[in-house]
Amino acid sequence: MKIVLFTGGTGLLGRYFLANIPRDFFVYATYSKNKPDIVDGCNHKFVKLDVANKKNIKNIYEAIRPDIVVHAASIGNVDYCEKNKSEAKKINITGTKYMLQYAQEHNIKFIFTSSNAVYDGVHPLFSEKSPKHPIDYYGFTKVQSEKEIIKRSKNFVIVRLMTMYGWNNSNERMNPVTWLLERLSAKHTTQVVDDIYNNYLYAGDAVKAIWKIIRENKRQEIYNIASSECISRYKLAVQAAKVFNLDTSLLQPVSSDYFKSLAPRPKNTCFDINKMKKDLQIRPVTVLKGLRQMKNEKR
Image 1: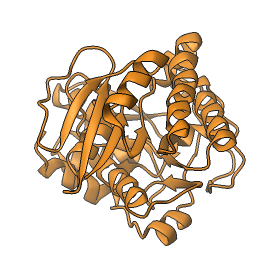
Image 2: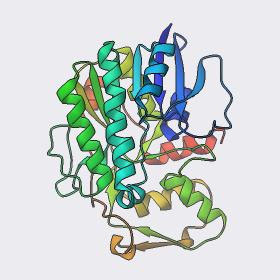
Image 3: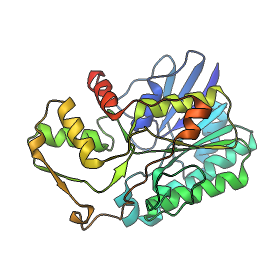
């Protein structure tokens, strides 16, 4: 039985990761504040962890003795990071450094979840070798963490995940689809940007890629993980509304300039996913199929 320590276990990725644990693995999933309203299972258990506390990290490592660490804990709200840079640095950069340090000391595989925010969105499609030029502070924290990992570790994999969708836990930050469904279900007119493009990723496919990386014992690799469809946020919203039988007339396409107070967003960070398809043999579902799978899932 192999042991995985998964940080950020209450987030969207964590929810799908825990729902797809192979029989020969046990997962310790971390939370940072209040214990989630999720029960421990026969193949997973929740533990409290402050990634910015070295002593807490040391105690967790020694108690669990993991074979693999999947470090997904971070402050992922782009606007919050922009307004609270000191806190974002503490959690996203320093926390990653501390988690990596103890993994290195015991030669534990370290899988780090990065983001499409490392790119500036100017010259898509972005491959693993494309230059990294973040335009917001959240993206900057991911780039700095990647540099630290590549510099100091020989047993790592960096997984750059495209913007994901799926059912998030009730007390966690919403994603583009769950946010939209809540607004349209309440009959709210909703402005959605039509000039920002991503190849949106169903969370279940992100998890498939990570488990494949674990199974095949990949080392010193970087993977860009996304679907094959590069579409606007507005088109995603229209497809989601149709799949969930909601009123598309409530959707209003607007340019990203409409939201004056928000942190800057790259216009098009769509990935080149050839390496993912070749090395991992992962074929992510289309957005339409992913939304249909989401509709059929237990919320």
